[in-house]
Length: 113
Image 1 (cartoon, rainbow, N blue to C red):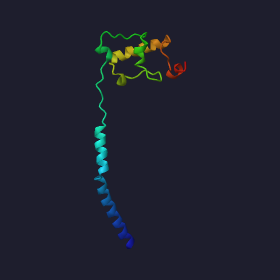
Image 2 (image 1 turned 60 degrees about the vertical axis):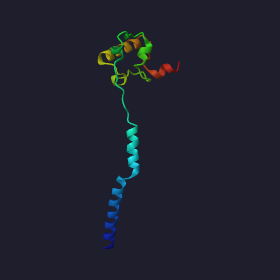
Image 3 (image 1 turned 90 degrees about the horizontal axis):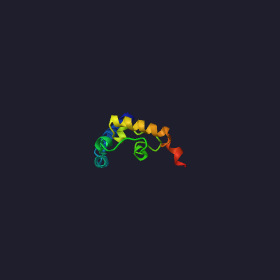
Image 4 (image 1 turned 45 degrees about the horizontal axis):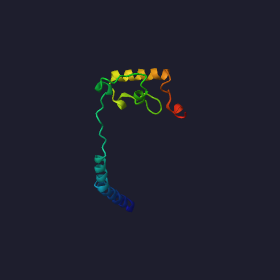
């Protein structure tokens, strides 16, 4: 019989501890900190739609380099912010520049030289 009463007491203690845990100031501090650190994304706009004078050309390596990550892959639209039409043009220009060897197929290989 004493085992049952001790178990009941332990359950009651656990229930009170659980209710106290939810009111901990640490949790509130964490919530306040997370509210301060929220990520606010900038609105992305197509660079080529905004500036009509800017042309997509496979020979413009500096411009094409912005759309390639460090491993040599073409960056997606959600990262660059270009519209679908210009993203397709950028991709074909990068591929043309790769075939002519203006841009490397892999990023690490060319970094050694």
